[in-house]
Image 1 (cartoon, rainbow, N blue to C red):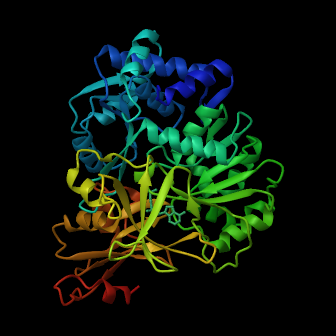
Image 2: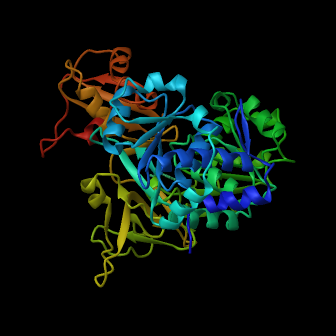
Image 3: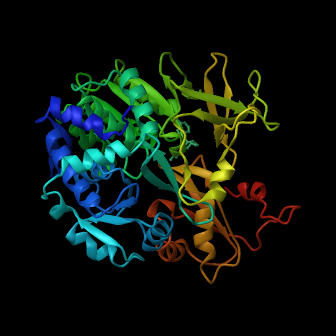
Length: 501
Ligand code: AMP
């Protein structure tokens, strides 16, 4: 059977040619327009002989990014979005790993891209989408492609300072979106309000549910997430009925109780969230003001195509109770392993491991990191079978639902962003004034805290490292100690450091 996500677009463009697929502040695109422009891009790539090659997309967040993604998919190449706000050194590290065959950008942004370590070719978006599409060439490529060919690579924070490129194929996205659209009954009547950046895997749900079902997705301007009342007014004005946001975005709205000013009870139907812990305290505010909405907590890392478990909120929770992450999605198996790599029993704590079609094929050009996280299922001695070890500690509650507890390692979630504290430490250590440093996360105050031995102020450090790490990774607090505490193994004593938080 043919399997490429663009067959969804073909069908939806036939069915609903003039319906708006995606809209941003400046532009909108219909399904037929999306297909036409994407096929024009695909033709350009295929004519240059590109097939199954990485394509970097360097564009401002908006409709054009999605046209580019579909262009890559039609040509059976795979895309990787590069955030235009990312510091140059990080972009260079990504380029070193990805080695793109092509960069899709605009003439205006090309000059900015030329500062990076890249000597390859460019596809200038505004020119390429105006070219003729060659459908035969595209069909021939899609006939050669198979469902386990890559669709995209998303880069996440890596502890050594080298971002990891999570690879995902067409089959995994098809499997996931089939589940999403069926479980939440997504149809052409639905209107999404997209929050997730396109370099973050939550966006997969918005993008592909829209394309598959013929819904419409509005790309919400980023600035609105700092202004809850205008944000809710925007949702109302666009008649958005489904949102899939990171909890941080929902929390900002709940804290300021923006619902008092804007009534969404006649429009909003589904509030889905994923990416970090959703505290019941804030969810209860949403539930109080909008009791008829469906709320669902989705859980999962980029490595398993966005989400692998879900919990549709079906009972009351007190503010201090944890919200479960629920049960596995269809065609997904969750194995919780204890320290002996045996399945946990009762409410024993263990690491959540995932088995199934949703699994990434590994980190792009990084066999070492791939082998650490994608391992043989210890419960299957008979045939090769890979599971993904998430590094998340969980347990089952009395309802048989999974509950997220904490991380095993130094990965954190800060304002919805996945960060390896090691990446910040690597950046800080590169400053010549710094001898030793350590980063911890203060969960209670939601602050990244940097410990150093030198008298340097935060503004100075952040100014220096902002060339190496994105803004959301900059420490929120710097603590200078006379000497860093060291444990019996000669390592920095993180337990002691926690006392300073
Ligand atoms: P990312 O790859 O950016 O999606 O980050 C994945 C990590 O975010 C997971 O391994 C968890 O640590 C955390 N995470 C994702 N969803 C949830 C959730 N619903 N509740 C708690 N933590 C979550």
